[in-house]
Amino acid sequence: MKVRVTVLYKKGVLDPQGKTILSSLHQLGYKEVTDVRAGKVLELSLPKMGKAQLEKRVKEMCDKLLANPVIEDYQFEVAE
Image (tube, rainbow, N blue to C red; front, side, top):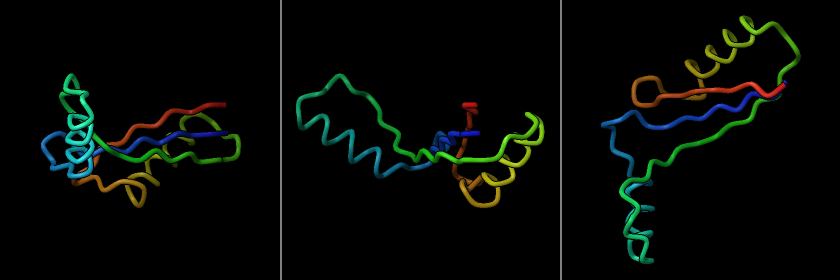
């Protein structure tokens, strides 16, 4: 099974990379862009398991290592 985890800073947390990208887009003439949030996407390969067990395991991984729950939010989707 493949799981895609997306991690972004929580709203209100300074995102210096996103601000730098936004500034660069404006300098290139893309003034219509009003905000950029940079994050990370992780793809996990896991053995087939029940939906509840899979969600529990991935949530544990995110809370313990893949995301900092104090300043980051995450979401994940399963592609079977």
